[in-house]
Every structure is written in C-alpha cells, then in structure tokens.
Image 1 (spheres, rainbow, N blue to C red):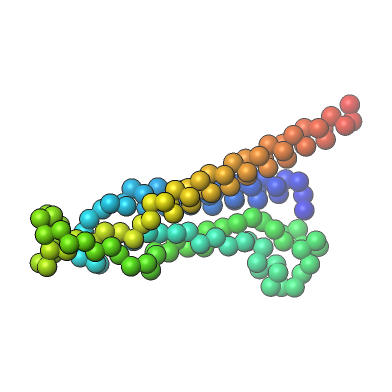
Image 2 (cartoon, one colour):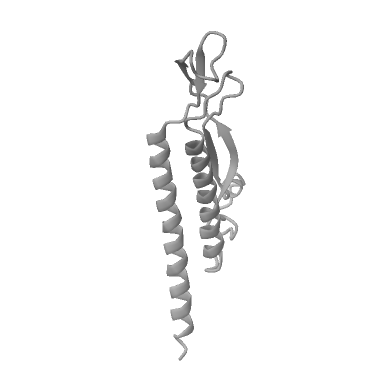
Length: 145
C-alpha cells in the first residue's frame, strides 16, 4: 500500500461520515413533523456503510499482496427505519385524521444526538489521520537534506 492511498482512505471515511451527519440532520429536522396518515409520515433514515475491500477478501487474495485491498468505506444505501410510528390522540390538531389521531415520525432525538456525536468524532479522527500522513510525508522529504 502506498502512503498516498492513506489520503483516499481517510477521504472516503470523511465522505461517509458527512452522509451520516446529513441523514442525522434530516432526521432531527423532521422529528416533530405531524402527518394525518401513516403513508405520508417521515421515517428515520440510516446510512449503511460497507468496507470497500470486501471484494478483495472474497477473491481470497491476501490483503498484504493486493494494493487495492483496503480502499476505505462506502455508503451502500440509506434505509428507512422499521420502528413503529408514534400515534397520538389530538382531535384538535389540524392534521388529525377522522378518528382524531396524528402520526409522528419514529425519530428518537437522543439516539440521533448520540449518532451525530459519533459521526463528528469519526470525521475528526479521519482529519487527524490526514494530518499525521501529511506530517510523515513532509519529514520524509527532509531526510535527504
């Protein structure tokens, strides 16, 4: 593995964490969105990450031999949560259905905040990896002086 691939790997990690932060922000923004039907109610979304080197492992090539063995992480999909929606009896609400119920998204604000902090820390870690690799390369250039 070349030292230049560190930048690609850390960049893919930062991109994946950005997607995670965006979905968390979307979930938090829609946490209190009311709806009159189950079909129109917002559902929490979560990104699914996958290691890019999975193909190399399946091919039974030792990662130490294959330069493409570890190329970072990718976002495979963004899925909606299957958790049940919150149904509240609010007959005076303008979005209430014929029975007086209003549907709210299945977003857990505490869980989303913890997810946001985790994504933020992972993003910071990838930045630190980039800075360490940059410092190593700069010091490598000064060896010959």
